[in-house]
Amino acid sequence: MCVGAKVNARIKRLVFGTTEPKAGAIVSADRVLENAFFNHSIDVHQGVLAEQCRAVISGFFSRKRSQVNVQKP
Image (spheres, rainbow, N blue to C red):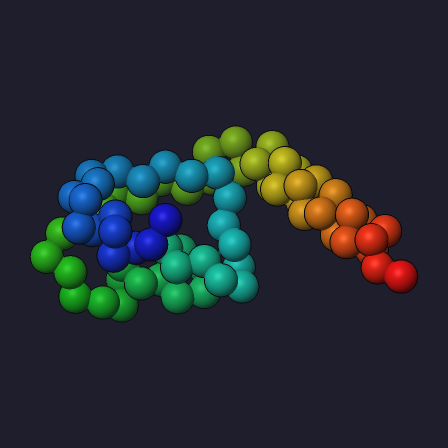
């Protein structure tokens, strides 16, 4: 979800499993909440079941890549 949407919705706490080092906006690449001026702050809790979340996400994208490779001529 867009960081701006979280701020505008006045979300108080964000809990997530794993980071996305290349494109993450909360604690990874951009750190938007730290580097921007907002009139609302969000309590961020990361790493909840991190290894399990990472495995689920990696498996999902691995399957997606294999489907694309099969469909290409």
